[in-house]
Image (cartoon, rainbow, N blue to C red; front, side, top):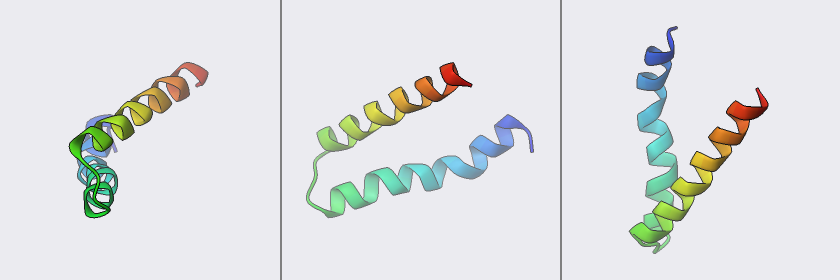
Length: 50
């Protein structure tokens, strides 16, 4: 698979795993944004280490 194909195949599921449980647990969009920040930092750190 190309990087674009991997992105297209994974992005929907990744978003669902972050957004849905947070909102179902009573979280707000601000809670989702905090999780997003953590994911972005994690991806950046992984890219730097790789």
